[in-house]
Image (tube, rainbow over all chains, first blue to last red; front, side, top):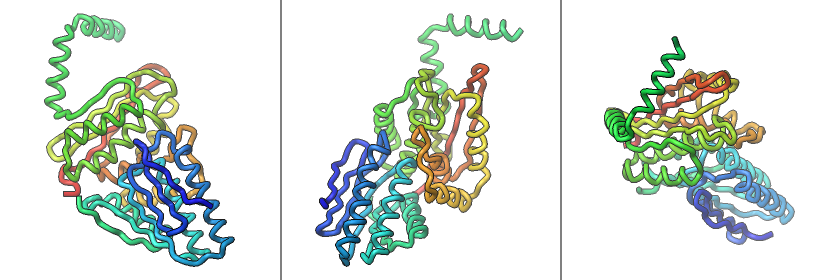
Length: 131
Length: 195
C-alpha cells in the first residue's frame, strides 16, 4: 500500500494522503472537467486503504484536513463518498478527526461542513482562516 | 400579419449599422449596470477566463466568493449539463450585473421543448422551498446511492445555487421554433452578503 499523492491542476485539487503519518490533506479548488476521471482513482485508493487498514488491524488516529476553497455540485457526491469511507475507517477502530478549513466570511463553506458533520457523525473541527 | 412583422423586423436589423449596434448595446449595458457578459459558444477554457475577469471586476470583496461559487454553477449549466443540447452551436449568453442592492447572474440558452416540464418542475420546487426544505432536498440527493446522470449532473446544482443566493430564481422560456425554446435564468446575490 502506497500513500496517495496527486498534484494540483487548473480545476482539480492537490491530494496528499500519507499512510505513514495518517495525515490526509485535500487542498485547492475542485471543479474538474470530468468528475469521474478525477475521482475514480481517489475512491478506488480509499477502498483499498480501508481494506488494508482493516487487515493490518491497526489502531491509531487519522487526521483529515479538508482545505478545499471551492467544490462544484457535481464533485459534492464524490467528496461525500470519501467521508463515508472515513466513517468506515472509524468504525474499524481508528480515531478519525476532520479539520474543516474555511475563510472567516465564507459562511456557505462552513455550513456545508456542518451539514456533513450532522449527516456522518464524524468528529469535525472547524478552523477559520483570515482572508 | 405575423410574418410581415417578422420580415420587417429582419429588414430593420439588416439595415442597422454596426456602429449604431455597438453604441446601443453599450447604452443598454450601461443602463443595466452590466459588469461582464459573453454571448457565443461556451467552453471550459472560457469559464476559467470569465471567472478571472469577474474576480477583477468585483474585486476581493467577500461577496465575490459567493458570486464565484454561483457563477461556476451557472456556467457549468450552460456548458456541461442539464440545460444544453449536445453539439449545438446556438449562442448562449452569460451576464453579470449589478442592480441597487444586489448583483445578478443571468444565463440564456437553447433547450429542447420536451425538457421544459422537468426543468420547470424543478425550478418551481426550488422556489417553493424555504432554507430548511432546500437543505433537506440537497442532503437527500447527496446521500442517495444514485450515480450521476449521463451529462455528469447530480441534480444538486440548482439547489446549491438557491441556497447560496437566498433569493427566488427568475426564469422564462421563449419559444424559438416548434422543438426548441430559449431558457433564461436570473440569480440574485445581495451586495451586503457576507460583509
